[in-house]
Length: 454
Length: 160
View 1: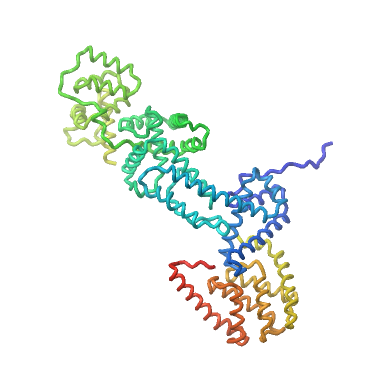
View 2: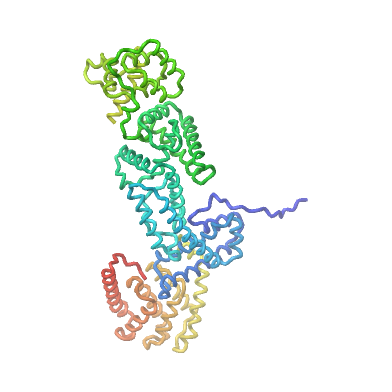
């Protein structure tokens, strides 16, 4: 017969543990699990009171035994911060409870102070590393946080009486910032993440980062010197889009053409496809920089959950151009197609060109072929009619035309509408056009006009 | 982190310890003909708790009471009849003064001042001590603290 006195192993529900009141929440859960009883808790609390009493005497330099309730609560928080520093460092909650049963609270508190003080030293060294690898960027918030804000913390930090707090000016936002932690452990975590973000950004040309940052500031109409914005996020986002456009992962600057192509591609995808594309791009980036299985790779992968919803919202609101930051340099002269008043191409040359276009897989190569061969408007329209470009590709080709060339086409396609005066987006109806290229052109112009009024 | 929660659960345990400690001070005060019964000690501790709560203070030891007994036992104005009630008044005045002097004066010095006023200018009158002397004293201390803060360039004074 099986004994009824089987000693069941007791477990603590870790999901109920509070990071900022670790020991107290641990005791509560241990009590619920039947691992400790009320007299243990009472004895524990009496030890807390005795340590607090000594702390008050130290705080008042032995001049007084009484303090205001606010001061006493703050000292108590500081005391528990150090106790938690020790208890949360142990491998599992169950063994922590066993240790609390054998060690005195004074011993645990002393060990916690030791851990916190070692963390202060480690974190000061970490600050020096961050200063050495910081980005060369003209942003006051970023620079002041590293050079002044965090050093202020160390100048004022009191490990004994105020361990849970920390007077500092940390205005520079990280991509992922855990505001739940406090005191020295918060600063350590902040600097570890900042160091990681800097390391990633340092893979790229510093002038490109500065240029990208300026372009970003221009899109959002913010002051790039004073505005608190996470530089890593801007760099990573453009890096991802750059990879999506076919670039190597060490590029973050996007041309307007690449930007348009990415935007059009994203618009044609559903959320699953976007998720897959972004994930694949991130995999390429991580592999390229040999960051597999590092803390940075996990950090970057977590960004998918932010970027994908943002893309979906921007697609819905038709403002993907606010996320895909393109270079402010006008590249139409070097990459676009230009019309001249020249004779049409020979038929054989034209057929060869069409054949090449049909065999070509990416739009940039197609544009190069068109640019090299087509000089006249007639050839251009014949090419559009020849079904060698997909619908979205046509729009990309339209985006490379100069204002004068677009005007030519507008006069051709919208001759009826122009009789009523200036073209308005609501006047343009793609379905009313006969040829596919005209439908695509109508949609392109409509979108362009809507974007210019937003 | 809530002190009242911890205190409430510890209250009975602490109270018993502190009452026993208080009664041990009879070993000293008896030489001046002053002793406390257990009932007196309970009343003093209850009034102490009330005073601390009223003035928003925490005192985890009874060192203050010990210092008050050590100092005021020698006063000619205290006898066995008024011993308990005077101790109750003095501890209330003490905690009131700690707040009014912004925690800038140590316990020992504060009790010395109270003793000096009680024995000399107040001639053993608690009413005079409470209503006149300590108010003037506290006001002077606060003025001195404000001047120090101004000279040192501190705008917020923060206790000791």
